[in-house]
Amino acid sequence: MIQSFFKTSRLMLLCTLSALSVFAQDYPNRPVKVIVTYPPGGGADVTARIVGQRLSEMWKQPVLIDNKPGGGGNVGADFVFHAQPDGYTLLLVSSSQVGNAALLEKITFDLVNDFVPIGLVSSSPIVIAVNNRVKANTFKEFIALLKSEAGKMDYASCGIATTHHFAMELLKYQTGTKAQHIPYKCASAVNDLLGNQLDVIAVTLPPALPFIQQGKMRALAVTSAKRSPNALGIPTVSESGMAELKDYAVENYYGLVAHAGTPKALLKKLEADVKAMSLEPSIQSKLAGAGLDAFYKTPEQTSALLASDIEFYKKMSKVANIKQE
Image (cartoon, rainbow, N blue to C red; front, side, top):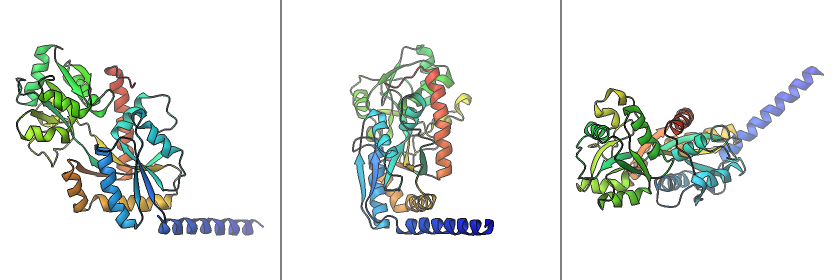
């Protein structure tokens, strides 16, 4: 009887694995929806549309981009969390959701445990730029200016508890400087810097880059670990020559995650297809044309980055008294 039981169990397991394999091979057999938690036009939305178009070609099925803004990205994430875990509703995750995971206690889902990474695809570097009136031509000179001003200077970011906000607060923490934060939207901050209403901004690179290239504002550094291929002339913060900033890096990234209940065989297909798509020169060229950097990370690398960034955001929120509204 025991042998019969094990034979039956083994047969059931093989049938289940076979069914999952067939399911993965057949995927997708209907439209796939990618939920973007922000309005059209931003880095998350552009990434989703570039990715969606290519995956649609690969899968020969429509990939629909569904913008569900609200709650700092939580509305869209909650929608995916409550969707069927069948791979037909994916989430375009960004570093902003990491900030929410670190700061907000009343969230219906756990970003790390309730979702599984498929892979990161792109990044939109954060640039620290100044008005041409500011007497600092290099990042090192800018830090010296902050120290000499003793807290008199302000800086604008793309909003409270955004990656841009955390990037500047980490900078202040590591250099022992002070500057008052003024929350903005990225495009508005760029416009007010040009209009001489702001002196310092930490914003996503694309809206600022044309004015930097025209000499209408001065880029001091990008916060990412590497220089942006779209702006190789702008050094990173870690290249400033300051010992306390030699390991500084804050990334602003976008990628895909799925519901944690998604079958593993299906996840493997999604991971392989997203990797193949992300490494295609044509996709990297399209991202660059939209002002985004190619930033492919494996599921394992993505998981490690999300977890480490959540801890970083928690630490910095306490140091800088950052609270999500």
